[in-house]
Structure formats: structure tokens, C-alpha cells
Image (cartoon, rainbow, N blue to C red; front, side, top):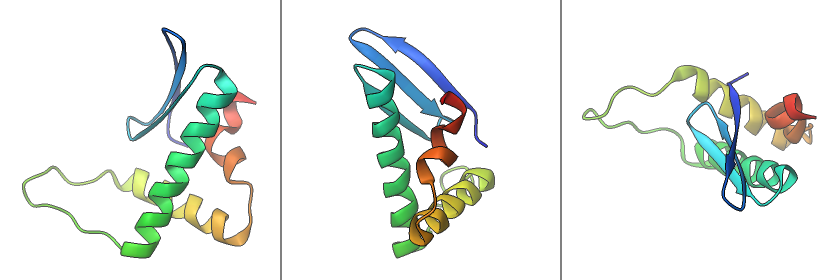
Length: 90
């Protein structure tokens, strides 16, 4: 599981997942909803378009890509994506 960090901000909070995705909201619940939506969109895009990497950038974190693949598989199979992403908070 990528590290999940809760940060307090003016007007709410931010959940940051492995410095790869985040969610913002006035409450922890809304920040979690935002984070889950962003991760699902990343996973869906990766599954739909595949992967392409620039030679000019550092290589991607394979652990993050594995996590996105797992989330994508859960989403397709109707699994509990939310529990997998923010389960540690609940």
C-alpha cells in the first residue's frame, strides 16, 4: 500500500497518496472521495491507453504502476476500490 498522508489546509484537508495522487476537500470524507476519484481516473486511463514514458524524465515508480493496475482490476471486477485506496483511514 502506498503511504497515505493527511495534511490540514486552510478550509479543509488534503490526502496525499505516495506523492502521486491527492484529494482535497473541506472534510476528510470529501478529501477521500476526491482522492478515490482521481486514482480511479488514473487507473482507468492507464488501462485504456497503455503506458508511454519520456526518455527525458526519470523512470516511473513501478510500485505505483502496480498499485494502479490493482485498482483498475478491482474497479472492473466490482471490488471495493475505496477500501483499497483509503481503507487505512476508516
